[in-house]
Structure formats: C-alpha cells, structure tokens
Length: 179
Image (cartoon, rainbow, N blue to C red; front, side):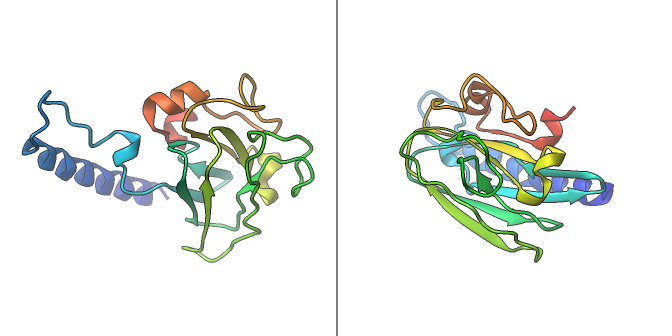
C-alpha cells in the first residue's frame, strides 16, 4: 500500500508542478497564482479507502461552492457515503443544514464505482460510511460557508477537520489530518 501512496503523491506533485508552470504565463495583474483555490480545482472527488485496518474518506474535509457536484469514488474496499440525517441509514442525529437534500449512496464495492451528489444549500455537512461508521469513517463538506447543526462539534462517530480549516485549505487530506 505504501507504494500506491508514493505513486499517488508523485502524480499529484507533477500535476501541481505543471499547473504551477502554466500559471507562470498567466496575465494575473497581482502576480498571484490562484490555481490552488477551491474554485479552480479540476474535480471534487472524495476517495473511499480501505488500507489495512484503516477505513477513510480522502480528503476527509472538502470545500465546494453551492451548486457543485461531489463525486464519491471507491478506491478500495466496500463503502457508502451517507448523510448524517436522522432516520437515514444508521444516523441518530442530523448534521446537515436545514432544508438540504440528504443522500445515501448505498454500499459500493467495485473499485472505481462512483456516486454523485450536488450540494445546493450553504453550510456544513457531515457524512459517514455505513459499514465502517463504528470505525470512525466520517467526513465533512463545507458548502459556501460554515453553518448548520454540524458547526461547533464533531460527528458522534469520529473526528473531522474544523469547518474553517476546510474553507481556508480547500481540502484536508486524510493523511495530514490523522498525523
């Protein structure tokens, strides 16, 4: 598994490097390279991963603007992406903004299988993996700006990055959060 992680890091580094070089020729008047801002990211994909005895979403925290679609993709294992909405799956509490559309991908097990959800309501959304909820497989998405019942506390089944950290960084990787 370590080799896979190194290869992914190398691929990301070369993509970032090429993006950075492309930014050098931009005509941005203040000279700032905005290629890493959340609105310029090429994709809003969250991987669902089994790695040994670790089960996680990567990134564990993601910022998107209202109206954007997030793709949940199986990297390895069998997982779901399920909103913390009381009565949905195993959720005993609601941790998505009032009026927001709930979601439950069902269990996906084929590598590369995907589920998409479009986030329209501004606020903070916590979600979990149905089969691995008790093993702390939880994540957080901030849409537009922090807000709603998930603010100021952690999900009942694990820890996630603070919403403002997610907004500031655009995405928080599982590896950097779990260090």
